[in-house]
Image 1: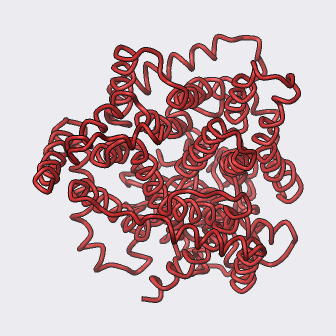
Image 2: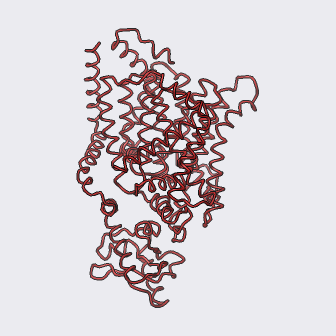
Length: 469
Length: 159
């Protein structure tokens, strides 16, 4: 019972912290999307709190951590009038009503989610990457009140996981203090909120019956589902990368500077989770320079949004690598030694790209890892192109984001040979799937089908999709 | 309109059935149902030790036994155990994938070292198998540890 209560308390605190951040950026979405995004943002804020305590040489005690969490909530909601106004606006927005035809998909989704949440709670962190790094550090941080603890006195020649991001270590510390010895439940918060966000994002343009089915296709990516209850970096990284791409897309529609700044913050969190995301962020930022190429103002003016987008990632990278790892950890980490010394030899780049395709995607192993999701996406894309030609602006933006991950992972494998194909690249592809899903959510074919279903369902000429486009 | 919503409801069920008829989706659903079926059993075993044993099996159980036996013999907090490679245990008929030192420390709070480490000579204890049982022995002289390390390295040390 106390465990349930603790989850509720943590969730409320995460919502408050996250909502505060969203209010600072004046982000306003559909209520379900706003709430789920607030919680996701809250988890991100929480993941920074024990790190900040550590950076200030403060003991990581239970009281210290929870007081800091409350303080973070208060600080982020200092502009409480704006926050209250935002809350009122959300309360006034039309409520989400479940339609009869959504029920089958929602039941299936709920059952799949329940299993994931239970396993997340019940089983200890399993992957070697975690037990030989963030998890063991978190475990001893709770016992010794510091993240720089006796683990660093153990022989660590077999691993470099002690240098992995403090994102997981920090969250594990919080949840262990909250009474969950295996931590991990933060992953369920991320998972559930992400699904809620995706479902509503898909429902913006396509019929909810199709949205539910697409979400099940996404959930049934076997490898990705496994990482919803086996804590590691890649699922969370994929979530924040997707959210950054979402707000980048929104910025490209509206030109609202706050949205690009918020997209930058989300990309910063993705980089905090996995530092090599910085390369993908830079590749994604190229679109900002490209889209405005015909607008007056010159190259320098076009660089401003890209700067907003990349700055938080650079800061988070610096904080994690150059500050925390270099200055606080008692063992040194030579990042230069990880970079491919023969960058002029491009053969490994082409080889990695070929391997991604032949071994990970278009292979029997690809089906085992990712089910049919990639093929469903390719089918929808092909029909779109055959039927209506080159996709419109928004689907094209999603396609570009997919391409960034698809090509970027090959580039990363070439730059950092340690990012191997069967582990790092396999999980790195997770970032591509929600982007593919949102392409499908904007597909001409599926929107056309949705409009016809709505028309038939209501007996009226459906204009909703047109209006929203 | 209500009839049409019902028709869409059945259509939705039909689409879901179709989706799960694809071989890989059906296989995955089977795995998920397997997770679901293990729920009643797991619900009855909520203590942490059982959950660790269930998840990590022999790797955890043997590691804990080694740690317990060390604690029974010494109270030195920095006692270091030289671990044989997993191949050694296979050769001796035991299924024990030796956790790397960081993971062993996570399981037990005891520091270990592998034979291929440049600090292996610092170990004061080592593990061997005799009559199918894992034995913890103290290292009495330098020659003994050198020989033990050589034997373990010969068997091949890997993650």
